[in-house]
Length: 329
Image 1 (cartoon, rainbow, N blue to C red):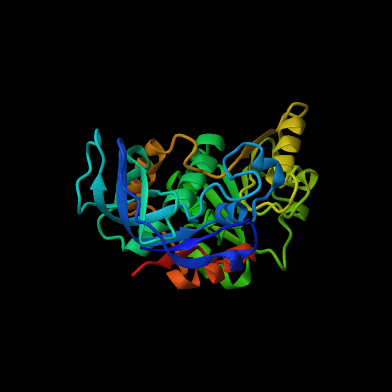
Image 2: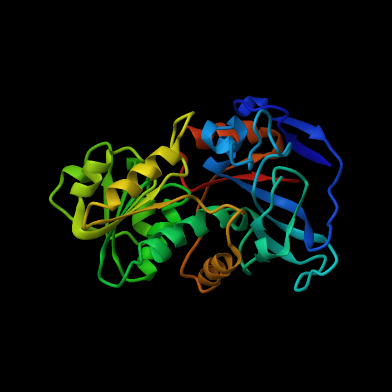
């Protein structure tokens, strides 16, 4: 099968399209014929092997990539089910977390897959797993957004932000989205009552105070973020795309946790959803909202499998609109 392979840690150009052996579904596993795969900041962190501190966990490898085939978010059709798997059969359309998603086939465990909602294209379905689950955890689980609250989403036009705006609106919050000028109409259409162009307005210098701030960007010091937060408000810091080769998001999350201990405001770190944590219930929750028509995945750009390096570079630059998706013929 064709797959995007990384033999070493490095920039996106270190990815190579190669012929590799097709994986097989072992006990408890499902083999998926991938039709589309989404790109996340998680992917370029894994590709570059940063932050270095994360290598010590063993999840990405110490001196070379633990997994040769990149990618994690996928949508496709079940090709094969392993022993003990229930609820899936060959031919079922699915989406979920599939390590090695930048390939024609990827193998994963059954709890990391859910049925693809009717009416979604494979490209839209691939956009759901990490972005929507991270947004759900930020808005509902950690932020505990309630009706009538004032919620600000920084990075509202991105992969997590486009889901977060919709989720907060579903909970009947008054949503303010911060994004680039080219994304203002999109963010407003997703349910934001107010939209700020970050190039013209700095929300940390205004008079507005927010009950919940979901920060997907990390472009403001913690002290300024707290200034925009209500006295008993919640700051949800999503460190998924944080730069920093040594500590990256880990350092920022430690600081948030430390300051939280000495303030009335609630400062909560949230790392992006990954297949290492419980994901099945969250995947079911977001796909139920999609099926109900309350949440719609936003796909900004698509690339062919051979163009995966360019797609990763596009996301790494930090200005992608919605989700960037790889189509796998």
